[in-house]
Amino acid sequence: MIIGLYNDWVVVVLMMIGLYIVIAHGNLIKKIVGLAIFQTSVFILYISMAKVEGGSAPILAEGIKQFSNPLPHVLILTAIVVGVATTALGLALVIRINEAYGSIEEEDIQHLDNQTQDETELQATEGEQS
Amino acid sequence: MKDLFAVVMLLGIYSLLSASFFVAMDAVDVAFTEAAVGAGISTLLMLVVITITGRSEKTTRHKPLLALLVVVFTGSMLIYGTFDMPYFGIADAPIHSHVAPRYIQESMKEVGIPNIVTSVLASYRAFDTFGEVVVIFTAGIGVMALLSVGRRPEENEKTTAIDDSMHEQYLVIRIVTKMLIPFILLYALYVQFHGDFGPGGGFQAGVIFAAAIILYTMLFGLTTARKVINQSFIQFIAAAGVLLYGCVGIVSMLNGANFFDYNALASDPVAGQHLGILLIEWGVGCTVASVMIMIFFNFAERREMQQNNEKINNIEGDSL
Image (tube, rainbow over all chains, first blue to last red; front, side, top):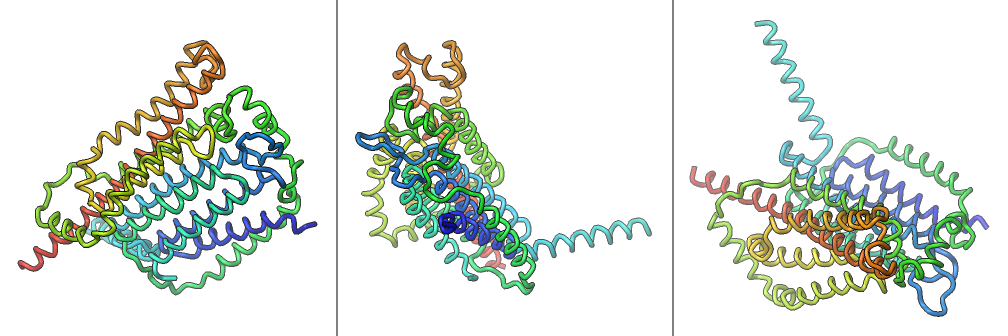
């Protein structure tokens, strides 16, 4: 039955929601939220691959024969903590951008950048003329 | 949704929900971590950032049609790709036929602890985990480099007084938190040492420990928290954790085995494994807890500095 792939489809839908937020929203905090959603979808992909029907959590105990695969659990466990550390790094960059530009909207930042570029070009041409 | 506060809160709820997904799919260790990290620490960090940058998004005029097109196209390609994937929950999928059976059948004999996730994390794939710890440490250093205020300006008497009176408003929360914090710290230690037998371990324990300290900082202010925990001490512990982890590998190398081969740490291989796992879980716990605290302190410090600057500007503006 093709419906047995529903776990992958859930992952794809979540992943695309995350990607859409990253592309379509100009606000830097929202971009980081989009990345977090994308990240969680990858976690769900790994964990759903590890699941075995009728299996139990991978902690050895009497009378349990079937376990889910422990390896993806290990990979994702560390990935979650690394994920929050890198998210913190991203947020730190957002704070610095906010200090430098006074805004966290992509459009405003681009606008300010273009302005300063124009000004420097103007100054350069004035310098050549004089 | 233009209110970023609501966005961040929804992200926290989503994290908690995905943690319950993980429990349903037998990944108790992962669920534990996701609940502590996603719903706890990362939500908090985002909240601190939106207090600095402002909590509403500007409305944009451009149409996201192209983005929608790209996303739908990529999504349908990915769905097409899933048609070759094994179905959900099938026991003979390729992923279950390589190293996993060995972990499940031999780990009790070779490592001697019931929680397979911990024995894979700390023993079979110790090198991998070492890399992750170094990444966390590096991220902590990166945040410090970006946000550290450096030399702290002299305490402005007026602003600290305002902060104190503000904190006294939430008397109930303060007293309840004061009662809860010792239990949270104790629970973190339990998670740290019980990781061999049940869900838990250094990563989760570190995050829970850091959450207790962050709770304290939020309610009693950064200056009080700094008196309890010295920031340079925290930085020292973060480095010491990584060092402890690496040293365990080097000691096993000096004893004539491979890097992170704990069998050589004691005369009995299983006892050596126990010792090695205990030590590196300590290293992981110390590094994770102190990096999280360090990150939060730096964010809070930045926020305090900006608020002070604004206040000083306001006072100067009034006097003019």
